[in-house]
Length: 557
Image (cartoon, rainbow, N blue to C red; front, side, top):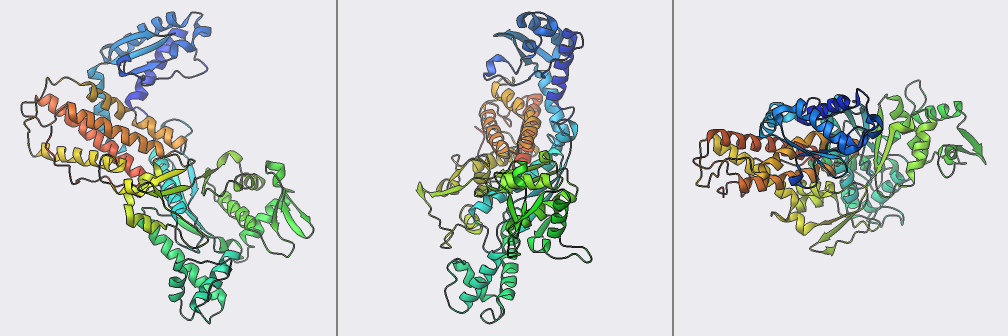
């Protein structure tokens, strides 16, 4: 969480009150300071009194009374009321003045509000190597890759916003049997023949083959190389259109090639493992002792016929990652890669890496529906939903939102009919409309526009208070989402904030004629802060925050 934010300062006051009551001794667990489930119970609740009986030698209710006195002294006019509830919880209600000062801090921070929390607290800033998507270069980016792209790019945005340094990398699997099969499939199509039984059947294969000069007669290795280059270029274009970019596209094939006077990355990794006694030979094959490090069995690196396995490339790639000096390595893998986790972790440790410094995150499957009817997909038959098709159908914003709205480790049922809808039933449209509505109100306010809405009494309405308190929670939401690798929490927060703004908009006219200047200014500040936070949340998700939408000029109720 950002140092010096309103909630951080309130937590500091609570910490001071605890030390006052305990005589300077801290409890083993830090006291919580959270929103109560019911707004009527106050703005924040703390369990501090329930953590101190052994230190203070008194029951929680008595400790709560002593904490109340200390908090009342420290907070002064910023505290409106404080009461003990249940077995010793303290419920605090802050004054309107405290809320106004807190909101002023939000506005002063501007676009940076909620950012940089990793540097201010928690585990500190890290340099992170984040690999994601890594779709085979033998076909278009499909729906599974689309989820990995949405998740990986949003996670990188989130980590950067939180204060980390992120290197985004795409691993191009351009070595091995799949490349040979792709070349054979391209050449077969160029000759007007069917691809091999285990080859690539999709209609795109013929399209790619048609772009390779003399594909029917050239050496199949050359056809494969040109075909891979064309597919990688197409993948880059698809991903860039999906607001997903990379700092580096890393070639698997490069791992197997000598580097000047140096051996290949693969051989270098093998040498490191041999020096540590991690490899052994059996029946002419080279094995890595991954079973010593938590894997269910030892893994083959080189087959008895001298051919390196896919795992050999994985080992060499992670040796390259480790030696580049990142504080943390994060791999985003597809749903069919659960079996890779233990062996990759074991290999990373065998190479000398810290097991706590590598994370393998598995994204689950996406089931597509259209108006409740399931969209069938068969990858072997070449019938799959490509990222380009998904974007053409529902747009980048809806596609990213729906792929991010749930935790990456749960299956998604994405209904295309709902995603196409531009109504309050579509959550991304609802959040974008809230942002556009606020921008419209701010523009009209600058122009001096007023409406005939009833201005009311100008008091801080419950919905205004709830919205303001939700804004103050943004730094915590960012920190929690970043630490849990959970961009979906940002989507959940943004939708909740948009709903809170809708309630505020209903109850608190901003442009009403006759509204006192101080009330109008206060409500405009709430609007500005909400627009800023919504824009930051949408930016993390890679979703556009529009200034205008079809309905944003609706007259205020």
